[in-house]
Length: 334
Image 1 (tube, one colour):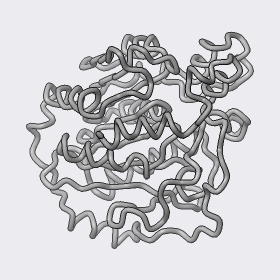
Image 2 (spheres, rainbow, N blue to C red):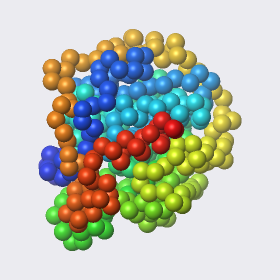
Image 3 (tube, rainbow, N blue to C red):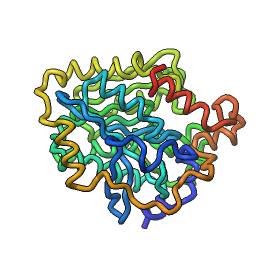
């Protein structure tokens, strides 16, 4: 009952802010876009970018005000610079498919994508890099905690701008008032059971999610191989893809020996065969595509910032511009 209430309460309207209109549709990214069952009778979009000769696969769980359309350039950069296969996972209510974005739904999509990679494409879990950004660090940490608790490993857990939990983050800003909400994405509770190698990247000047959240998670992380990269002069959105994300991750994976592993027996042809046989490329019929109406106010913290009179400081006057600019810096590498 508590999980149902949490997945259907008002907080989700403030926590999640899908780009509106959606930046892609059912026919976008031919050959890369495919559809997975959501476990509740529907389908959700995902992206798979094949890199022949790659030894690992990176699973990307994006931030709040972006979708797979905005993430596509970043995923291509990961594929080409890290020499990995890449899967991008979409959240409920993001992209063209209507839905209710919530913790339970995001975690279901994440598990479905991981099962597709490990069961359908037969990539061993220990060859999967799980990467979460901002709100995406919640489902990323949850997934790795579940995998590690089942006595399995992933190649690495990568958290960019993570938070201890949504409730803890809200308490930092408004104090005891945050006690009225039910907590979700409790990274601080999950990360002690994350024993796979872990890299945490955070901007020193991040005021949306202060860097102390990353420090606490690093200290409590159960992995023996772990690293905290604090990027000076960077706030929540000003990361440069190559310098601040890809290079630290490349160095971390090199130390783990991931670049010296034998390549996975996965080719563009074998991936397309799996897609065709499983009918994963067939988009669902969507009578009323999502995205014609705005989804503001968006992320819970942005809403709290408005209450505190920090709209200008946090870039709340225009919900889209800060995140789109971030994606130009991070995804497009321009």
